[in-house]
Amino acid sequence: MEREWRYERKFAVENMSHKEAEISILTNKALFKEIYHGRQVNNIYFDNVFFSAYRSNIEGLSNRKKYRIRWYGDLFGEVIEPVLEAKIKNSVLGTKYKYKINNFKVTQKLDSKLLLKVLEKSDIPEDIFYELSTLEPSLLNSYFRSYYISANKNYRITIDQQLTYYYIGPGINFILPKNSQKGIIIEIKYSVKDDDEVQMITNQFPFRLTRNSKYVQGLSLVNDLI
Image (tube, rainbow, N blue to C red; front, side):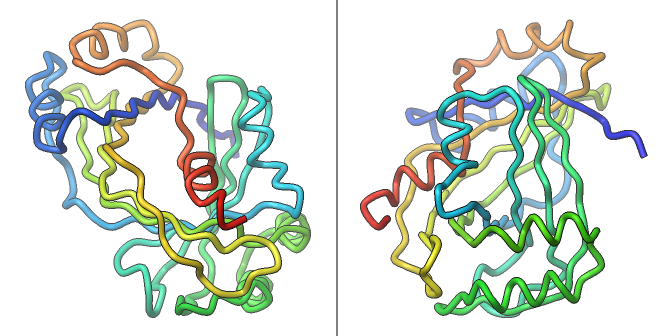
């Protein structure tokens, strides 16, 4: 199946509240409106002992890939309907593959071997599982996300707030104390064919594009724990 490649433009905003950012989005001439109910997003990222996924982002490599498990709702407790995602980046374009995996539980003890067993018993491609077996959980993060879509449905925007990170790096099988990121992250997502018109939207915002990765930001924030 052919994958859709899309742009994901980000804005890291420290001097604006969620409400102020939302007003800026809803008053944009693209006529955005909120869709879905806001919800808590949780991710477990994977990396090798050399933190290659982290370093490839820092170094700005054009082609890179990272794995994460994502679920919605409570961070701790029974994880319902989690999804394994392989995020692939090719220069400024991105795509991802999603695989439903079996439910599991998150407590203060997060055993990498247990996660590997969950993945092994789940219906994911053999080559993906083999690659994951060479990696370990490296970061756990959680944030509250709001969703918006333009009137023509070509542009989606999300606002992430209350970003919190927990270090669970290689060789550690329990969750270390949290660290929080200031401000909010705004992201606009759209297909390649709609790139010509996006500037008319972003020029109306009182914030500017920034290079931002929650994975990189999270590991940087908990760097003293590594």
